[in-house]
Amino acid sequence: MSEAKHDIIIPDIIPELERGPLWLRQKRRFSREAYNDAPIPPRGLHLWRYTDPAAFVVDRTTSSDTAYHDNYDVIEKVELHNLSEGHLSGLVSDFGGREIRFHGFDRLRDQGIVVTTLSEAVERYPGLVERYLYELVNAGVGKFEAMNGALWNDGIFIHVPDGEVIEKPIHLLREAGSSDSAQFPRALVVVGQNAQLTLIDEYGGGAAGNGSGGSYSNGAVEMFGLPDSRTRYVMLQRQSSVTTSYLTHRARIDRGANMLTIALSFGGAVTKQNFGVTLNGPGAESNMYGLLFGSGNQHFDNHTIHHHASGQTRSDIDFKVVLRDRAVSAYTGLIRIDRMAKSCEAYQENRNLLLNLGTRAETIPELEILNEDVMCSHGATIGPIDPMMVFYLQARGIRHQEAVRMIVSGFVSDTLRQVPRDLQERITGFVTQRLEHI
Image (cartoon, rainbow, N blue to C red; front, side, top):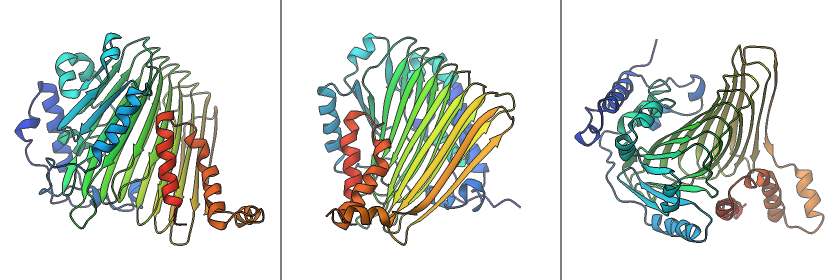
């Protein structure tokens, strides 16, 4: 028997969301109806085994029109400096879809590259947006994807035409609001045939944690890599310690296309993230690297999926977790290979490092392989630091705390090497900060 519907529903779409062409209004209304009709996913049902789905239901009294964390402009200034130094091709500051600012895109516009709001893209590029928007992240994916589909105010649209190469990353800086706020960021990215893009998608801000209410963020990212394209997507989540965060990222890459996904998670109180890539043509290749560092009472729940819809495709996942204090992590990774997808290679690894008693990690590798002409492997480990490694370093005059830091640094170094240069120092700083009190 299914669980009863939750008593908090999305009311009729507010006037400011009833804009745009008929197809968009219909998509929003369908998403709203799907959210209202769908029950809360039952606890214990597959991907909700370790996280209470009720944590991601927004109270009807929550406002999405609010102030932002005091330090958002500090981070923006850092990235504007990186832009001026030539480390970035452009910077977008997104404040819950209420205000979106664009910096440094004149040169890219001269190349025919489009970086704009979704609302403007709907008017200027209607055929392109209608073709792809809601294609990968929609009400059919889940209840909370339907919530985003109904309530996003405005989003970011990026289109790289065929053959164009963006040498430096584009950085999206998405800020959550302060206490009792809700944001629904959304992005649509289309990378043309034989084109190249590196995208940094950073989620920050949130309530200050001074006893007032928390913040809520529900994001959706859809990415399309056309034949022979090259795409790098870096997600950084550094939201405040009283933020509840939900993010769904879905990509589809065609023949000969390559996608690198790097997921970096450090913030939030309760965080659930879903990363998925469909390999849709021969020669397509997807590689995912994840790094999660939890401390305090943080709760993380991550799911990855590589769907091999075509033969002669390759995928690899390497997801690392470091936990201290009483932090909790759950990871579920699925490799799905269709019946006619012959000659595929797929690999998956999840390693969890527990720095003290009181932490907890769960890992569930899954394989759904419908033919025998494949090469697949998966592995998972959970455990503390090897005491013999600590002993070896201490025997050479290194203090215990420093020995632990060195071991953890080595554990995460492979992932950090994949991060674009302008982010490496900041990411290393996040890791160092969490190791200070060991």
